[in-house]
Image (cartoon, rainbow, N blue to C red; front, side, top):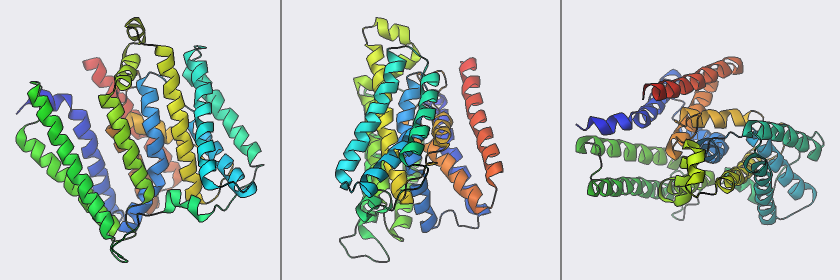
Length: 384
């Protein structure tokens, strides 16, 4: 058995195993409620905006920065969309386009202060958190604005239609799930063959086969559960598309490799000819766009925009990245890890709520989990 490969990837496997153990624990403690189709659907909808923002936050953290403003930006964009649609009767598509452009502009402004004015990201985004929280309150005049038209609500509450006419079982959703499971296995097999061709360490055959059988089976089973309810949520399809895009960007593109290099050693990266200020700037623009996407999703799910929308989201997003293996010192982190970290937080929130644990103790437990994740990261780096 190739212990070198397993040691290198031990955290990744441990993270996935942790999610499975946590789900099994809450499945038992909730009397089977956790894995019911309705609750699985709610779990996806409740965590969709956290997962979306975690993808952007991962790049920010990998580059060696932090963004404390994402929750406030998320709430501000939701409020902007509500005002445009409800009060000014804007069509949905132009509203979405303007909202994303405003998100990009917000990210660009904060990115300029960080990348070119050289102000620490903690200070810039802390100021941004206060500014956009205040702007959201002013924009909505301290009141909730809604409801939204049905075509806007579909962003978060729509489901994949079934051309087969299924009412109690969504056939197309199951087919899409099975194709996704097969596609993931095929991609992993291709990655393994490429690694072998270059003489790199790979998983033992038995381990590789068992991992893919279990993973594909879990994906197929979850899609089957969702198919027995209303099918695959539209927002789940959006999340899957974004995860695949960011997985490709971080693993297969030059800009992805440069972001990791930037977080690992900014001076060496700059001396190698990389325009590090521009790279830093772009990570914040990207974060602003994804915060805007999350704001639209959250507003559509609530069917209203409130002045307190987005409150505390930045904590869950940052925690998801750190629990998922991102390093507080930059240069380390994976897309899949951030997504798993987001779902670990989501399953814990959902499971503790079902069990009737108060929000006070929920915050205590989540804080302890975050501290433990960062402690393990620091401990492992000090041992290396």
